[in-house]
Structure formats: C-alpha cells, structure tokens
Length: 271
Image 1 (cartoon, rainbow, N blue to C red):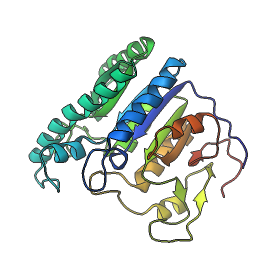
Image 2: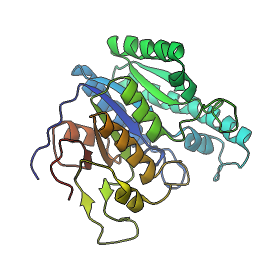
Image 3: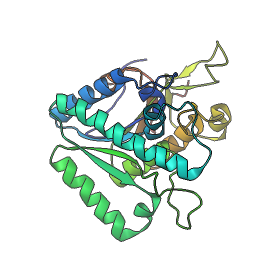
Image 4: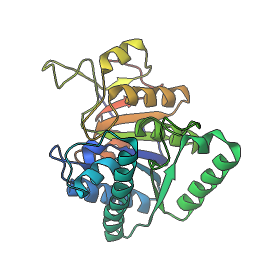
C-alpha cells in the first residue's frame, strides 16, 4: 500500500496506560521521554497538539507500591489523584527538557453538556494552543463517577479523546495503544490475525471482532477505540490507531506511511 493522504494541523494524541506503564507496573520512562520529544518537535513545526493521557491510576499504583487497584470508588479516586500529580510531574520534566510548555486540563462530561462551561473550556484550549502550549488532558477522576447524579464520566479516555477532537475541530486523532492497529481477529489469541490497514466504516462486524477490555491497569479496549473511530468518521475526521511503544511513530503517521490502521471516509479499501 502506498502513501496515505494525511493533512493535519490540529491533532489530538491519545496515549493509553499500557504505553506508559510496563506490564510489571513500573513506569515506562522511555515512552514519556519520546512522547515529549515527538510532540515538542511537531509543536516547533507549528502543529497544534492536544495530548489526552491515561495512566493516573497506573502511576498511582506504582507510587503507592500496589499491584491491584482497590475495589472502593473513593480509594480509586484517591489513588488517581496521587497518580495524576505524579503523571504531570513526569510530563513536565520531559517537556521542559525539550523546551515545551504544557498545561493540565482535567475534564468531566458535564463541561461539554452545558453551553457556558463548554465555551469556557474551548476558550482555554484555544488560548493554550495560540501560545504554543500543549494541553495535557485527563478525566477529573476525583469527581467523575457513575454514581453521581450528573453525567460526569466519559467512560474511558478513548471516548474523551474523540470528544475533545470533535469539540476542538481537530483534523486527526491519533490513538496510541499496545497493539499495532485493528485486526480481523484478536492477534493476542490468533497467530493468523491480519492487520486491517484502512477502514472507511465501522459497523457491527467490527465491534464483534473487538471483544472486551484492555490491560489490568487501564479501562479501555478495542471496543472503545472503535467507538472513538465511529465518532471521527461520522464527523468526516481521520483517526489512526497505532502501537505506542515508540511514540516517534507519530512522525510516520503524519508522513503518510501505512502504519497502524487509518479510519477515514476517504479510504477506498477495507482489507
């Protein structure tokens, strides 16, 4: 397959917990560094970048020397609060090294539901991007629970990243995960699984293939990524799902190289 047509100036990059945390629970410092380097380089080229980062719970577990997330919601929220602070410390250190400013933006679903708060947060994003600051976005886990009266939760950061891309009129959503792209069957279970390079429509068949949730440190899985892709396609935006082991793959994506899976209405094939 030849070069893809990727023309993106405003880009949302979502990085999953599995890319930031090793399977043993330790922090993947290399990913933090390479992600900061890549986004800083693109920022210097004039690209507008928003980073949606999971990992607060995973980093919190590591910080508190725990192996399993607690069952109680309050304990989970406390752990996420600890992890979010540590997460931003790690990002600040690495982005500072590459002379790039970042800002933390914590969101709940209510912000997008109410016109006034939606306008305020969009104005904040636009001001940050105008000043070449990279917003680092996560869900506000200390107040976002399904048990509250308001519709606070996004459910997962795949959905959050798609909603941010939608409201910020982004050209492209890049979802970095622990898998190379979307397959015709689970590559972790079937050795003959085939990577689908381009998808122009997300239908029931794709969701059947997608299966369940992801790693024990995160909340997402292929199903949530397809929901994000479905939203992007409905709004005629592009999304690429790729392996986040080396974040410099973002350079290849923007160069139009056929890495990962491209979700785009302009795709001719679904193979």
